[in-house]
Length: 569
Image (cartoon, rainbow, N blue to C red; front, side, top):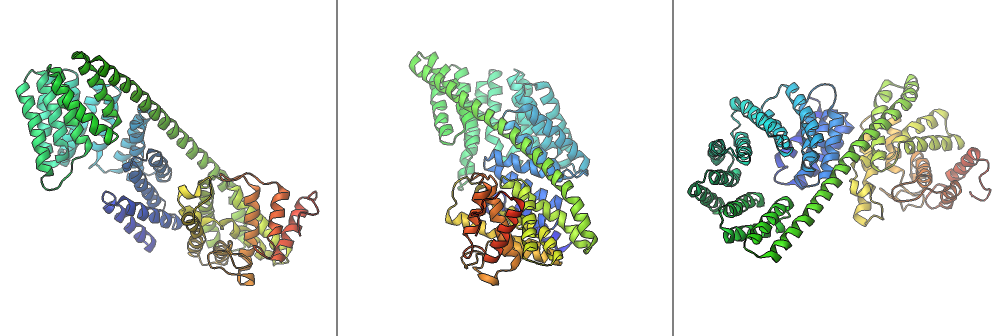
């Protein structure tokens, strides 16, 4: 491995180590890994960093971000050679679709994920992906395929000793058998699942015992069912005795199951007590799917004891919550489809930009060392990404480069230098790849902390571009670092003034401001030609070098002969 690869690999290993314990730190490290991987051209490492970011977002119920990041990871990891990052990113996309009840798309993604995973030659986690596929079939009501897929997962796990997965798979098989009224196999599978979970997956024990209890009730063995519930609660006490915590999902699984069993057994008062306690916990922890089921059971229970007002109240809350969940799921489905569309559009635009710039890069490389041509395309793609993330198109980068070159020609700079600036200036905002979307896409004004974060794009841009030691990239690094300095010294990052600001930075500052004004952005309207030129001219001697402003105005009048005479200086 190269030094860059070792550095990025170390960061990715740190993310994996701390993702479950310190998500904030893991996200920061993953962002660093992504930036360094992109700057070093390490495509698969960048894809892995994106997958880690997607997993962190999913862990924190940020479904939109998880889907978008995983989609980016898939685009990068799809290199034509099977790799684990590609497989797991597809799997995560499938999981997000599944949670949005978009089962057809979930199944499509996960089936592709298992295909890619098998092609990698890795086999330790194949059962995990099969488990997800089986769960999708189960949610679609296709129980036969769900059972077949769960059983395939068990067969694959057997030689791998994945007892934690086996417990989960057997538990789901037992649940399906029980729902189909096949209580004897449900009990048999449930017992095996509980035995495995006690040793290999303790967090599953309570839920598995609850399912087992319901299977026993199906066999009219109420005594065994009561023992299962007692054991589940004893397990809670044991696990919390030393300060451990139970997840709401674990507790609710048992509490709701107790209510269902009591209701089926005619013990309505006990059912109401259990379900009411479960409803309180579900409401406090925003477990809406479980809350929906509880309202349904409570409506039935209150109706059975003649408390019709309370039964109606729970039925109405059930309907209202069902509409809310359905609407949210539909919104998420639409957003995931929009992200997929946007990603596809961005790929098409990037390819168009690549084709448009390839001829220019090739011509420039004829007269310059090969390293410039080798690196320029990669950095232009990175600069294009920064523009896409900011809601713009790649036109900005090219327009700034062209205008900067024309200004340089207008003041009599050497033609070679001016043409070199045309390419270098395109990379002026490359550092924005590291700015958070919440800041870069914010439609309103930035606060102080957000503005300070934006300022860092000049420093990072210089750092990225300084990695290539040629005249072209030294010029690009210089322009990226100094194009926000002001002639009067009030700019950033170093508060340079006058001729202490490199000429490249002074020129690009004018080209950048003009095109930013003349282009519609997420946070502003598009200015007219006259308005934008007049604004730049008004900054002469304050924000901009007066000599360069005069040159800019002459360039704009040459481009647009009808430009008002009083627009410039």
